Length: 95
Image (tube, rainbow, N blue to C red):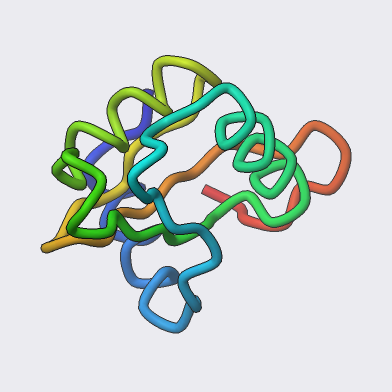
């Protein structure tokens, strides 16, 4: 579990990130979760977006992904959300 100060720090880091995942009408699948998990292992912090046709809100999609792969939801704003998971091999972000 991350503290509110750590969350604020991660949110500030996420400002410069590009959106690398989009959740579409297929929803949150096992395949998407695996890809996001791999991306988190490489980057630790990623930004994703929920498309209008998915039927999910950003908070719902982020929560479902976080439960599936054991990561932290940093923020949900509009249709975008930011996820964080500490890398086991390449630790980049110092909390």
